[in-house]
Length: 315
Image (cartoon, rainbow, N blue to C red; front, side, top):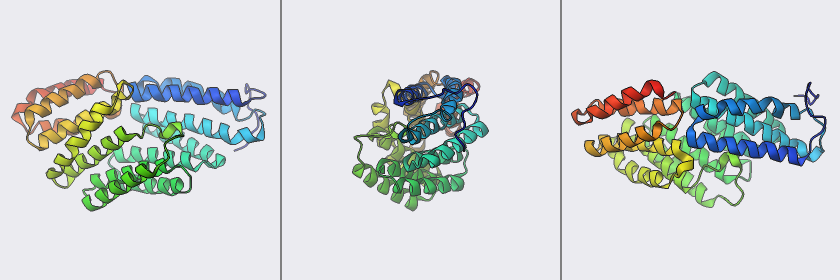
């Protein structure tokens, strides 16, 4: 990449310009967590031309890496919101741009986070092998940075990929590693792209891993999934509505696997109610396993119909 100033780019920038870019990305990321990528992907994309134009401006040498990282983070968020909206090829293009800039900045922590997000795209579309490859690349980058929280994020997702493959031993080992890494992480100054990974999200990931172990390895794992998911649901505040809805969906699946149909229907309806406030194609996709499981139970007919009614509107 060269730094020749494109037409319309600011001639010179300083630290305040970069700080405004960083703050705008934080605000948009908060909207994504709360209301889904469908609520803000256009706003994210609208910020990118000016952000990229800044790369060609004159600036102090010590600011160049910070600006590269800030623009990379905006591309990273663009990729994530587009993925959540269902625009996967465009999402992957933005992740590629983010990787280029993060590499140029020498920012291993950001590189690790981008690899995690690319891996999540593959994991969502049932390409667990490709997801594992991205997560392992992310772990290598995270281990080369002082940001140990990023390593824990990658380990959690390695566990999830193994769970989707029905490989319980590897999944549980990766979960244990994640918990050790999370406990050891310095969380006093967490970069914005990793800040979502709190004790609550750890519980949500544990619940997600055991949910898929219950689905693909042994239904008995549902008993481990339920308490973790209940902790996550109670811990996610209004700023994390999408994550709470995801956990409610998984919780309903586990109650069905445990043959607690009435409870599953109540929880599933709660997920649907919450999901109506979130514009996320991933939410629609995650409802499908719940619908498939609910169809097996005569007492869950109403839940099945409510899910079917919602699916076309969940994009």
